[in-house]
Amino acid sequence: MFKVQDVSFSYGKQTVLSQVNLEITPGKITTLLGPNGSGKSTLLSLLANNKQPREGTIWLDHQLIHQIKGRAFAKRVATLHQNNEVPAEVTVGELVAYGRMPYKNRWQSLSQIDKKQIQWALEETGLTPYAHRRLSDLSGGWRQLAFIAMALAQDTPMLILDEPTTFLDLKYQLNILQLIRKLNRVYHKTIVMVLHDLNHAMTFSDEIIGLKAGGVILMPQKVADVTPDMLDQLYEVKLELIQHGNQKILLTGNGG
Amino acid sequence: MKKMVFFTTVITVLIFLFFVAAMTGPLTATPIQILRGLFIEFDPVVAAIYNMRFPRIFVALLAGAGISTAGLLLQSLLKNPLADPGMLGISSTATLSSMLWFIFFPRLIQLLPIAALIGALMGFALIYGLAYQENANPTRLILVGIALNALMMGLLDVINGMMGGNLPDGGGINMSFQTWRHVHLLLVYVSIGIGLTVLAIPTLDLMRLSDQTVTSIGVSVNKRRFYLAFIAALLIGIASGVVGPIGFLGLIVPHMAKLMVGQQHKTLIPATVLLGALTLLLADTVGRTVMAPLEISPSIVMSMMGGPLLIYLIRRNKRHV
Image (cartoon, rainbow over all chains, first blue to last red; front, side):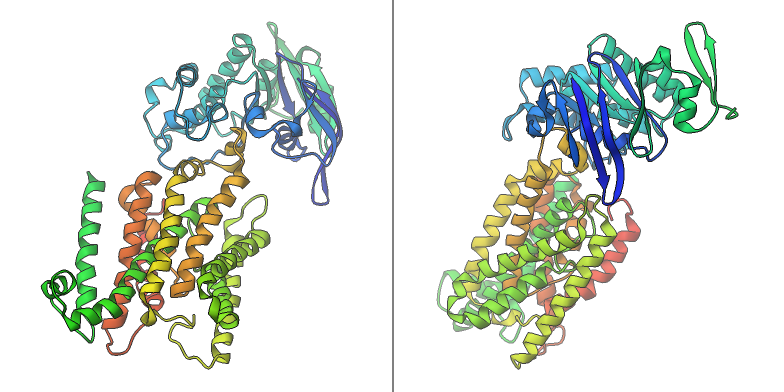
């Protein structure tokens, strides 16, 4: 799976990531945590082959990712970006069908396999009844689910999600996180995502990677090993961690 | 249903306007006289209209269709609803380059479209290079375009002055000197351009998604964008080379078409083509009749009609502009 070696990246003179090393464990849900500007989204863009690192190399199953061509890459890694524009007059079904682009030539129409995959993606996201509705007529939560369905239609072993729950109601946040867990547990997809909510990260991830400004990696950790001290280092706030059943809960209320 | 009504109306108005344009002017003829003169027996008046007025009408139709289609392409590929080949200086760069070609190589006029195409591509390259960074900032794009256009229009005026010309639209190219040769030239290149645009419908539909999303499904955004830019440059180049830079047309026509038929490109493109042809012919016909025998250039008429129309469109439907 993904292996990041000595990767640095900068926007102009501003270094965002420097000498980052990490590995993504296959078959797990890994969440990147860190304060604003720590380079989480940049790191995801690098993994998504959307940007190229200034230095260092990124491997995907022992292949350099910048050597994997657009369509071949899109069959292995699907990416959900932040702030998706809502395209004019596109129906949910049409959007999800775009997820099959990597599998067909320009003039080919959808095959049986394509249709089956699209149907599956719609079902898993609960969008089947909305397939013929326009995206612009749906609420933010359903739109986000539609973009997730598009990524699912790509039928990739690997899913990258940049803040999939930001700006959504709690109901949709949990809905999406539960879907992500199901995709991992039932369909064995490897998931890498950025989340802002610490408790969501602790509850729904297997591993946590903490990024500080300048791209310093604090911890690739199993969730069970995360301590309040680590989060204190990461966010510079004191937090209390309490155990509720077998779930760890961070009290983010009063900042210690 | 709404679409059927729209297409029927536009085609009817277009035919009507064609006859009005053919009839009005220093020489007048009735529609029946024109049809008789064209198809049944020789009529000196109709022959004169055929040789002098018809080319102008067809040039307006073809250039209008071409510029409007180019505007649609530009808005799609720059993801900017305010993109207009006239306002961004692409038309004026193309006009400048074809003017220079005409001045330096008057005998190689057949190659004028190539010069105009190169000019339009250079205009694109300038705007793209100067303003289109990783995060396409629409405001920056428009501002750079306006600056480029001002520079090019200035240069056109300078050259115009140096040539001793005092032509009405400042573009150095006048609608009243159109011949059948111009029509043939436009017919070939505008048909190619519109044909390529029709073939690009899947790409145009795809470009409604964000660049990142398009990349994530394995499509090279830059390749597709270059292809669309090439078609747009071809259309703008040839049209600006023949009729000069005409502002607003490429901006307003696609917006009107979107309001009428929606944003599915398979209907939006024919709507834009027809509406573009209609609008420029209307502008040209109005321009040469309201103050006859004086002529107002169609680009000035376009600005006069287009400005208020654009404001109306913005106020009426904020979603599209």
